[in-house]
Image (cartoon, rainbow, N blue to C red; front, side):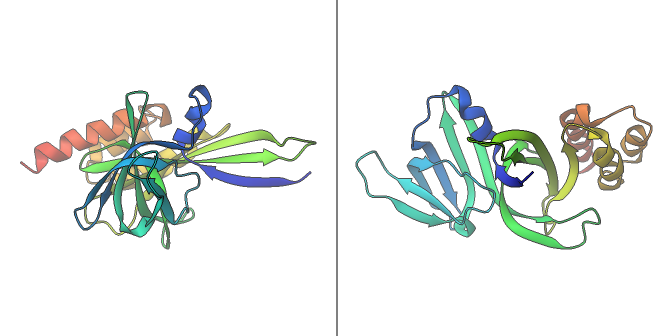
Length: 206
């Protein structure tokens, strides 16, 4: 049986209930301070090196280098989806970096939470059939060189990565780290944990 991986954004997965079209309303914030408002194609894979942009339906397409983008915000059915092109640490040891890759912003704060999604397909006849979805959550504080994995949500062992990595990342808040180790918080509380940490860090820095 043959398998192949496709890395998608959560936005791409959520578009199944939205009428598909080639371009969506978007704002692109460049690192030089320029803001481009208009229409952009959806970032389809985590390693896309360009964003296709045009001012309106009749304009020519401009290909913007991903490395020049600070953040990319789509507006679809009055809901905003924000993406960044960011380096991440690779593997379980989290010692070497890779990327940058596209990540969707989940929660902003002292520590900002991101997600990317990988879909494993099994090629059985035609068309291919999806057989597994993995959501990798990354987190980073301002000034850190790359985002670190904090949770992987799949079909099994969802709490393994969270319980191993979250206490390490939040070690400057010992009480929170201890509660994670003691399973008072699990992967299901991921966003809540990030919010708790950010509130604590904000008060600490006042």
